[in-house]
Image (cartoon, rainbow, N blue to C red; front, side, top):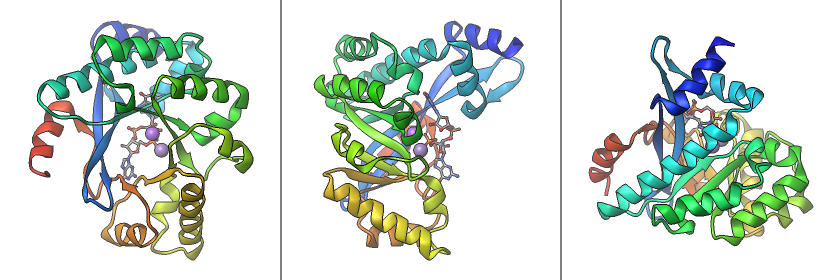
Length: 253
Ligand code: G
Ligand code: G
Ligand code: NA
Ligand code: MN
């Protein structure tokens, strides 16, 4: 309960920040965008991982407040980068609770406008299991977001239970293959078969494919062979603060 109280303070008190992890276009071997990942620096406990405080925020109803902060901060950062001449697509993670938020689409639209960012520069990631938890809500939110020009991505794909016919109806642009399959790529023929199948499925549906959690050159080579569109993982870069990213990117043009 104490931590829940602290989290309420954190939103207001400047203890939250976003770190950004680069994603690479496999074919052109260049930066294709970044994923924004929330960080909480607790004044006494130090860094608290999102795996701990996101579920807490979801249980306590703080997730929308937290999510709204992320939306605004990501747009503010895109505007700052634009002013330095860098156009970088930013992906944010949305919780299923946010999809139920009635004013989610208008909030995102307003944040984009306020920071003079084009909607196509923002990508929203929703995990497959969250997306399938409440299909009607997902469909409505995806259509609303897609209508204003925001791109949508299905995260952690392969761990939930998607109906393929349903997947076909969602206006998503991208599938992110779950880390667990990437982890086993070099040692498991099954994992390789799954990744191969997901890439083909996605391409047949007109979606691009991202592999997350790429840690080794061997995994990278297999993913290139399997025609995966984008790669993300510690092999290339860890999530980092915006100012570090800027310095890092100038060395990776
Ligand atoms: O950054 P890290 O690997 O610790 O993230 C752990 C989990 O927290 C991931 O599943 C990630 O999607 C989730 N996460 C990170 N930032 C956000 C956020 O801003 N909103 C939501 N809903 N989840 C996030
Ligand atoms: O899909 P999700 O939003 O949960 O993924 C984001 C999380 O994955 C972040 O917490 C990030 O730190 C973590 N992550 C990013 N790259 C790698 C990687 O190469 N290996 C592992 N194990 N985790 C990674
Ligand atoms: Na994600
Ligand atoms: Mn993921």
